Image 1 (cartoon, helix red, strand yellow):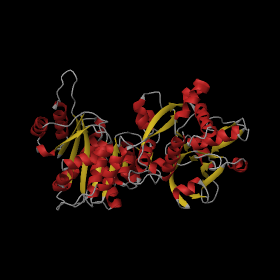
Image 2 (cartoon, rainbow, N blue to C red):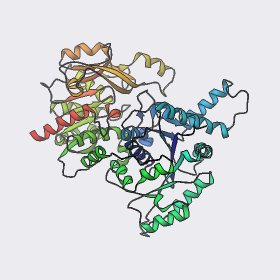
Image 3 (tube, rainbow, N blue to C red):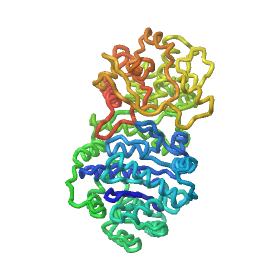
Image 4 (cartoon, rainbow, N blue to C red):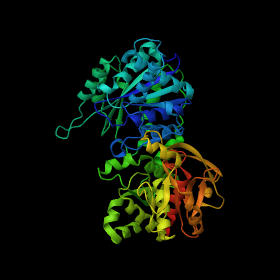
Length: 552
């Protein structure tokens, strides 16, 4: 059971999912950390999946990889960005992961022959994981976001864990309910009834919301606040307005206007109002939404486009945010345009010529052959027309394929991910991965997590990082085939970043004498980009894009 003295905030959803529990959790964490408290954040996903690695990005959104290699929900990325720190795998759990551990313990007689039951044994395992994460972070306050909404069958064991913790230590646990307050267009009035029902559903599992964050298109008026307070049994001041804002990075600042930080400290008996210092955050948030900042036009050439625009932000979330952070640092607004690589395949020279208007081109990560020839055409266009190019993971591998085909004249050059019997497999499956795939072991078996990378002197990469050794996060099975490294280098290609033993090619680039900025990474730099610490490679890419705009 949870230890007395540690403080816990459970963030739960009412009415509907997808209204911003992750941003609420991240923002509360940002506020409390600014008060000098040690804060950690946990995400609970009610899926039977053990992790997020096998989930389709067009359905579930981006898979975010932690430093220790665990594949998680994209909310973990938001936590890291708002808290400005890396989180370990113990901070992420799913129903599948929890049940796997309970079953493992039962098989090992760790329950000492007792009958193992859903309640209390599964909630107790949830609590054990929460406490383990708290201890590992030496946290004063632990934020626990429960995915989905109140009333869903999948959430019961997690809400039961929260109830058990609240019962054991009532002064140490607070519950925040994020609830959508609709304004039906045919009525034109903000309706609180769905929130009232959500509150009663929460009561039915033995929990009472301490705070209700009312998500709506506009701010709550006094009448609606009073109505929610009366029917949901909380103080009117604890009904916090959470209207749509221009940027998610404005959310902590909005919450502070309603004194949410002070009230949370009071509720958790954290005596003494600590001074809030969100000055750097406020400066960044203003820069991120500065309408007067000059625009820089960036094309993202990808493939997860067939389900509509809303999918794009979820599938490439960390890439988009990384661009924003570097743009804000350079006092620019990044205008991102989605370019479907399949359209480049079909559209011919005219479609490719449209890429000229962009100041920079990014090809992000991805899997499979869909749209691959369109990506290769975009890369060739960027190289030949000297448009700044940044390739991420698959984007680097295809950069190598394009160069091998068009400069080395290896017309059959390809990646064996797409063409197993390629006559020139310049990108090939890593040796240790071959057994995984032969055994049909897909979940959690890629090259995952943080690995060191040595940077060569006199390269773009070394100049950007300003150091010799860096650590970056990976998520891939395929690597540059070492057999082709020397021929590529002889033809002017530069592998500026390698594993310390020189075996794995981690960064590829063209020298500045050949191209203003053409660089690809085998790793995913976007996972380590932060609002207050933009990633140096994204920043250098945008600098090159700004330079192109000036010249044009």
